[in-house]
Image 1 (cartoon, one colour):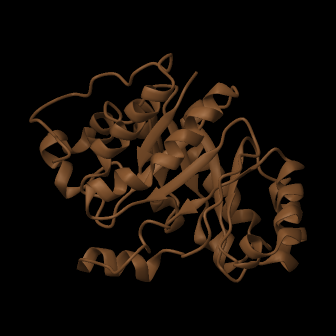
Image 2: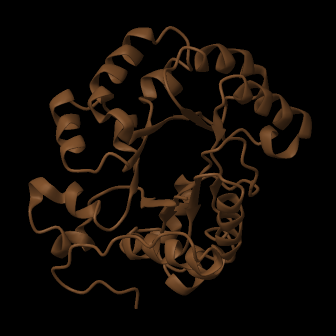
Length: 277
């Protein structure tokens, strides 16, 4: 039984006191969380040597969920990007089992009429993959949602929900919340798992108490998934992400209150106390 939790990055200015060796920040992060989103790979394919260092700093059961490059998903829209995809897959190969899923984040304009392209593309990917869609039709049109689910089922791919309901609940209270709202999608919450390995992205607020109150439904769902024999990964976001590292651990601990047999996360490396409040 495993629940993996993590953040949108493995280093942040607010965490630097807890990551004293710059070249080993990922190692320090991996003592706090056991998964991470690979958002930077959307903008540039990493050097293979860098990826080898990522593998060196993490345990074999650590989970990377790496976003495919934007040249593949947004610029080429899954057409004619074979060379870029091969270069990316070669670069990240040193992660081995740590590469939990290839994350196919699609633009908001990629809709139901593009599902044939998506289905063909997914069949070319090695290993596990997960898809994040942002076209409103997939959330408002039951027929479109079922078509997407069928396309994903052909390769046992997961549908990644990005839950921003709490972020958009009520007025923004800070510049960071205003900025987050300008960049994040505002779509209905989706809570259905398709595979053994569901992946959730949850976005909270500046106020940690509001973030925690808003994730209680996900704690219930994650607990149920664990009882069903699934192995979920949950990523915790906040507008500036300064507190997301301890919050991710707090989410894991909250799920443990519902599923006591879930093993606790190991104690992190400590340099100075990090608390939520």
